[in-house]
Image (cartoon, rainbow, N blue to C red; front, side):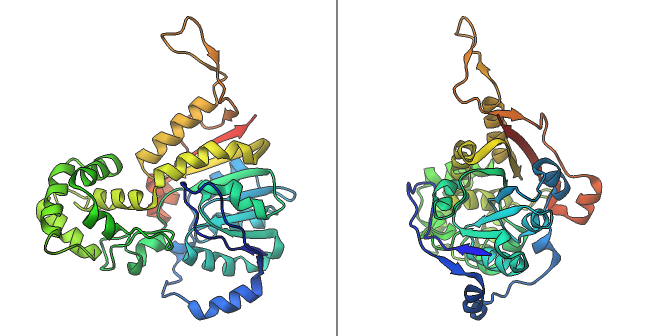
Length: 345
């Protein structure tokens, strides 16, 4: 197994710093003193739409596939067992630590890279990999991140108002809540959380933080509930927490960057598979795949269609692939998952 550690990479960084490969066993020994309190529950390992991903990416001996959101290593493990060489990428150091240890048995069949999937070309620069047969990304927060109170993703457990997937990033959710202008908070809540009461919540948060800044997840969630009491199954803080997480991690920006770069990494016939969990992400993927799979572009102001300079894919999923009833029963997180796939021409 190869492990390459990268300095922090975000969508705004144009070039990644390069560092040497580390021996996996030595790296694991050093990490043994840094065990987290994360529980080894099944939810950490459960990959969504696994059978469907394997069906589209067809992992096999001789193929190289990138798992751009390694997480607990569930998708990677299945593809490795099928014989493929897998490059696992994750910006979350805890997730990467766990997955590398879990997949140690596969030796050099597995390569782990630390960094953001939006900068895959830079991350692959230190390897001998130029083109791959498949690329998978599973967008969004993982179950164990939500369960780990110290990461600050969930309002269900008290923890610091953090939400950073890459903990080397400076700005936390607390910084966004306590330092952003009222207009910016309103925009974040409206655009990233589709929160109807975005204006009211932004105004009240700005009033409250003057004397008492927000520092914990439960403090913010309780404050939101006091303004917008629970009226249905969805907790009043759900949309605000989603919006803050997206803002802190620039999730929509890095998704767009991935989509723009992916074709340069794929061999002809290589496939890009993207799993999303909410409408904002799925809309971006749907529109990009639709555009990039059309050989011509037609606009009403043009006398006739014109060649599409972005045409490079064949669309394999006219509609998103969703989980079946049996999977949803075993893994509730799969309820909102949507898989879309294209193949490079």
